[in-house]
Length: 241
Length: 241
Image (cartoon, rainbow over all chains, first blue to last red):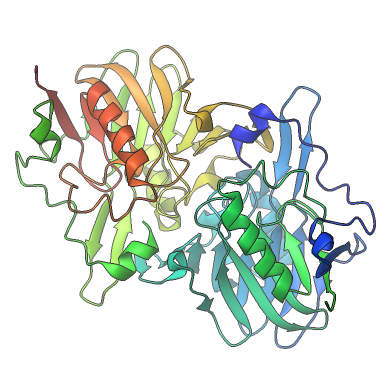
């Protein structure tokens, strides 16, 4: 969320993706983004599987406010990784969702906050002992580790998982790339993408549209499935020129 | 914290403010920043009093990492306002500090996160029902309220308390201005200021030094006491030209 934007534009419902809506990326003939069935929230794989615990939303209300929350995603495999934690009001939901999978907060090895907006980083406090990557900061407890995310370099968690700088929405966004699912490479993208068909909205929510355009193109070039910050997962189809 | 910077510069200890250190603001002859005794963490007033619950720090370690935490500040009066929540590891400390003052998390009416770095917004989840201002976003539960903080406009909480845009360290920083303490106007500034004598460090930690310079000058022009993000409170003395 960016309050600035909310004050000056009435956004349409962002998760009302019409099937096979075409984004401007189509114009180039290289990429096409295609909604997946709304029930498809799990992407099994080896060694890592990806599950969307909560689909983010952004819904304009009749009184001018917006009802909004960020997508919460769990990556399970050799490491247990949570990408975004929703808003503070998601605390009980998040604890319950983890419990349903046999997990306690202490079982989560790495928590990634894609960026520092309240609908994404509201429950970091549940994971005081996990490794933490919030935007471009990497820490464990109060020890912060030098890294080069802010300089545009990828941070490899292991050979399957990478934290990828994807600035634009804020100055310090990151996405999490998971290789080797049955659906191919999955990118948990935070608000790099609002939803599948966000050409009417993402620029208004961006601090730097030029940077975000570059980050988006790189995501579309490399991911098979994108999990956006405020909508359902969608598929990327790359066409040959 | 900004990991980028940590990777390229070894910062000196930031909370080792020598008494009467002079910042470059002196050069203009208009402002002088003066450390207060380290024991002075409370600023009583009517109707609002300000208490620093935890003094933030940023200490370079011998292995190249940094031990860091953000300052946590409580404002008590007609409303109970918490400014920054420390890192996730501060959860128990924060709960205990509130309890010592006879407060439960549910008693806090407003939580302000000065910016979205993990050492400042680690415990938002303790306050699911409070009004929340994180950077330029204002929300209560998952309802986000249009506002003009990102356009540079002050958000008045009441006649004594204002949330003031103070960008630079990130693109979406805010500070909290408290009028009417016995020490005058107190500004809880997040990382707009690292500490009293931060001329050796703040630019390296800034996403936009030009904007931050403007924000800092406005702070020095209007505040009598500044509570910085990683050091002890300090006094601002304005000189006549």
